[in-house]
Image (tube, rainbow, N blue to C red; front, side, top):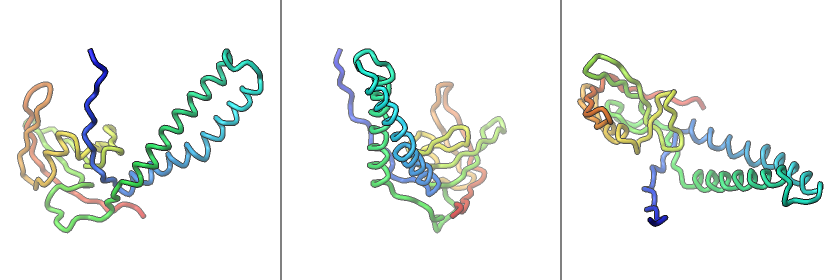
Length: 169
């Protein structure tokens, strides 16, 4: 058994203005608030003496590594992202940032918003454009029929509404 993992597929480099603000807020919180607090607690723990059995020191250093890793990731990711804040010219089709309402064969309705992989939120109905549902929805119009393979079998949905909302400035 090997430890080889194939490289992850590159994810979409798009993000909404709302998602960018959320990532920037997380980066600010980690860099300006959490990291100085953890650095201070590690410094105080180190002053207590023996570091080999000092749990506060060990876990503080571990938390610093986690913060630094996340800060590096966010900084790099924010640099390479393309912010999509405008509504497309053709609002009759599903594109990035669209709110799509679907109906299944039982008459149940589902609302989804196509967003970037960094801002998915199942509770809000935000799905990635890289997901099977997101890929299938891209470019569809009202009354389009889509089929998705799920664990329970093939599911069929119809697009019944497409909406683009202007994001708050």
